Length: 343
Image (tube, rainbow, N blue to C red):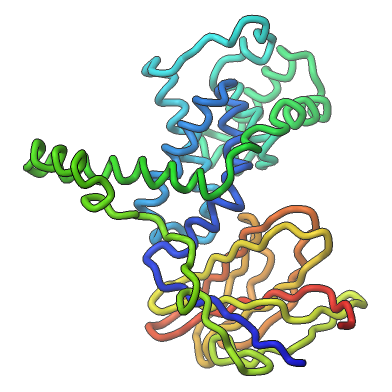
């Protein structure tokens, strides 16, 4: 029996921010932990960076994780220089890593934990490439480690950090921080006492939820599509695609709503490979840039249906589809295919 195929359409101002938190916040939290060596402080640092990203979310380009990582590193640098949160390691935890200068620790985390190239790390830190390489070499010498041994040590040290905190809980924490910042901004405009009193009395009624909430049962962001095959951005998606000697069956699709200039989709972790296909409204000019986890994987013509990009198994992914010259009314579609099990 044919099943109806759900297609999620984005309606809120920041419909994919929570997806981004779900996919990327774990990696960013581990980066924060390696910088601070303090789990609570790392959570605060991440919340601050995500909160800033929330305010400017619709203006970020197709690599939001790089932008948020830059904010995280810059905020850490500010905290350190102002000595707001410069803490000593807990007793018994002091080692050579804790004695590294701040700028060397940042470079090592970016290069050997986040796997940024020297050029990308230099862009993020706004320093010459030679400076990044010099700091990395000096730090490795100080630690008396090879690059491979340092990668393994950092991965081991960050393993398990933040596993007890779910994406929804972290998004709620960011929402609370944004709400407080929003309230402070309004207070500075004028009625400080009145706003503070109202916030205490009516709470959420004064500061409504600022992050997209989980869809309620029934009609909402998940809109069933009865067409077979489904249509995304004006194109009929094939029920199956063939690539690398395997057959993949359509699993779900997402479609942007105008006038958004890009589509971000979180793809959950799976034990098997997945394939993505994308489409833009017929006649859309320019090209379409597709990135996965911040890396550009395709630069194809716009206004057509294109595939495939194969997503690796065993980890979640953030997929971004961005037309370079989209017009008002042009839409973007992303289809996700999973291995055909023959059912």
